[in-house]
Amino acid sequence: MAIQAPRGTHDVLPNQSAAWQHLEQVFREVSGRYGYQEIRTPVFESVEVFDRTAGETSDIVSKEMYTFTDRGDRLCALKPEGTAPIVRSVLEHKLTADGNVLRASYITPIFRYERPQKGRYRQAHQVGLELLNSANPAADAEIIEATVRFYEALGLEELSIRLNSLGRTECRERYRAAVLEHYQPYLATLEPEVRARMEGNPLRLLDSKDPKAIEARQGAPSILDFLEPEAQAHLAKVRQLLDEASVNYILDPGVIRGLDYYSDTVFEVTSDQLGAQSALCGGGRYDGLSQQLGGPSLPSVGVGMGIERALIVLEQLGKFPQPPKPDYFLISTGEQVLEKLRDVARNLRGQGYRVLYDLDARSVKSQMRQANSSEARFALIFGTDELSRQAVMQKELATGEQREIPLTDLVPTEALA
Ligand code: HAM
Image (cartoon, rainbow, N blue to C red; front, top):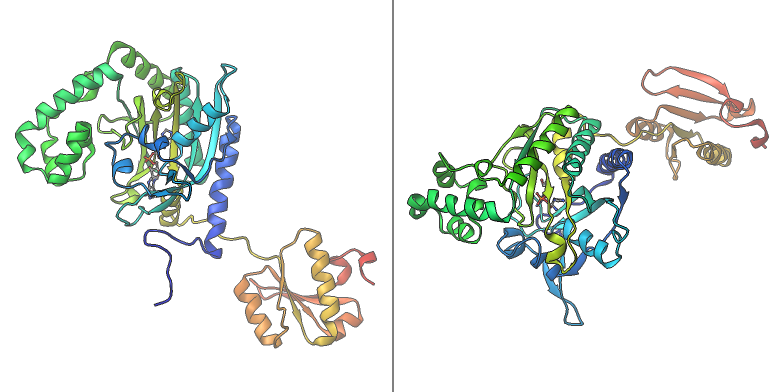
């Protein structure tokens, strides 16, 4: 069999790339309105960037990372997520040394050795925002608001914004113990894999998709009942700011997140259009991440939004962005008109029009077929009779309407030698 793309990866084909470019354009536009500037970090990092931050108990680090040893014997990893590399870069370049906040945006591939299915890939792509060096709840609200505005600008509808707080270290310790106690009677019924994951981080039981774990979740304690007063006040302020911004959210203590670096605010946006992999994006506050990398305290909050998942939803809504159509398809009726045709094509392109013609100048019938399938707005037919009058036949392909037009309607007089 011919060589294929690695399992879980996809080529973005020419007729799909316009949709990607559109999404990226909308992202740049919306994030720019909030003052975010793009940061680009390498596709691979030293493995400890992720070991130390994402949490050795998270699936992403313990099972899914693409690691390799380079020829200099350094242990590297393809980035499984975008946040830790950005904090690494911010620390390395001392970007917050002036004490100000830093707003960074990014567009990046991520690599996770997951079981591929619809909406879940081994190379996926995210657009994301990180707001670094602010402990203010206004930062959390800004990230969530910008996320929602991005999805609105893209045309996504009926999304659920799920908000939760994971509190701070002390409350999480107490909550972990309470969760373990709740699940104790059910432990024997759980799959060994679910149990192993739980032993690393009991909170993962709360967002497990395992049917037995879902059953056992009934009556489980809610983290919201454990929050320290500071965490409660932080959450209350974020909620107030979201209300002010008319962002409708659901308070959902089931939002736990698959990375271990979060504290206080966490959130996800989900869509019913997505099936099992329903999360369009996820994010939250990661005040301790900088210190895990050996840096100073750097309270920060951010979001990573899956590009493929947003495009799946757009497609299901019948809104998949289409490639732009050519303005003109130029049709030659023989060798003798080709030079003039190329001249006009060059000139129209110079004016900014999208122009196509058949390099091989096949039969007029074949060129007409190509013009129709290109969905160009106009075909311009270069016939010797018309050219002797400095004119061409213009056919509007959608209506079939055809009329002779002077070449000077298309290109300036001085360009017509
Ligand atoms: P995450 O929840 O692991 O968070 O990923 C964010 C989003 O990326 C997911 O909601 C999903 O849309 C998309 N995604 C993740 N993995 C895959 C995959 N295998 N296939 C397709 N799409 C995927 C993070 O990555 C954090 N860095 C987000 C963050 C930024 N937190 C703070 N700042």
